Image (tube, rainbow, N blue to C red; front, side, top):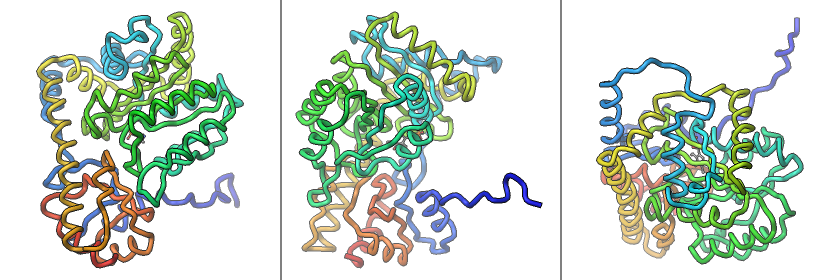
Amino acid sequence: NPSVFSAIEMAPRDPILGITEAFNADTNPNKINLGVGVYYDDNGKVPLLSCVQKAENMLIEQPAPRTYLPIEGLAAYDKAVQELVFGADSAVVQEKRAITVQALGGTGALKLGADFLKRFSPASEVYISDPSWENHRALFESAGFKVNNYAYYDPATHGVNFAGMLAALKAMPRGAIVVLHACCHNPTGADLTSQQWDQVIDAVVTAGLIPFLDMAYQGFGAGIAEDGAVVRRFAATGVPLLVSNSFSKSFSLYGERVGALSVVASSADEAARLLSQLKRVVRTNYSNPPVHGGKVVATVLATPELRQLWEEELAAMRVRIKATRDAFVQKLKEKAPGHDFEFVRQQVGMFSYSGLTKEQVAKLREQSIYAVDTGRICVAAMNSKNLDIVVDAIAKVL
Ligand code: PLP
């Protein structure tokens, strides 16, 4: 006899997880998964950062009961994040116009922001880059928004279609929510220049749009301050602003789910009202966030030696990715003369839209190299041991 569940259909598979499943089932010992969204070190391992281990040792020395955190999260964490994102001496922090709540990773921060916006700007439509992180659309749609694309990537140049992007911003209706990648665009690796950001900020302010900056890779582009600069520039304009940030990658704390949502208001009084409403969103979703990851990040950010160590460890990840881009391009130049991959050097962050077609990706898979159908490869999944294998395989399918 049929139940309410009997007519439910199978949901479509997550495209990235599908790659992982196929990869796991492959018995070739030389298989390589370039489809991942995770930083691996030169040994192909997800690093456990020393700053994290040291902070955890400090926490173990002071065992604490596992009480509930406040709805908005650990106060020391929220403060440290806010200062990292906006700067301790920024006007928004000094004037108490910014609020920050601990969130379940960057995804959780985006969802809090989406639910919050749906309550207070229900008629707005959301605009995401074409293409964008694949969860942006689903996440805002599940919060009840109509989600549109704005022009972003230009396959011809492997860079940003800036004229198209600017035209799209100027054509958006007032009050539209525009999701912008603060740095290290996922999936393309193509970022705006500082001058282009000037024009984007100007267009967003003039058109009365609501900017929602997603910063999941701070420190993987040019540096912590450099990558965060656009957030501070937006904050300085005085427009309403939402910022989601994640420590999954920058602290290699993926499974601990540490991120935050910050919202900038026009006054301290408005900020207090926003916070009270944001707390309702949290309370009705998961009540309050988990303790461990927030404590680790707060400890690292607030302890000078550990913070120094974190900055060095993050820099090492950034430098390794850059060196891998260079080596990848150089080796392809030798193995596949006549094919220009120079653009991979210009792209930033963990990913590259390699320009490989769906058919070429399928042929790579026959050689046990797994990439996303769009041609996205994770540069951080390549290392000194597997780079030659990857490059040889690519040279064969070009
Ligand atoms: N935003 C972007 C652009 C991302 O690439 C990711 C992760 O891949 C996220 C948000 C989500 O981060 P988290 O894993 O912390 O939820």
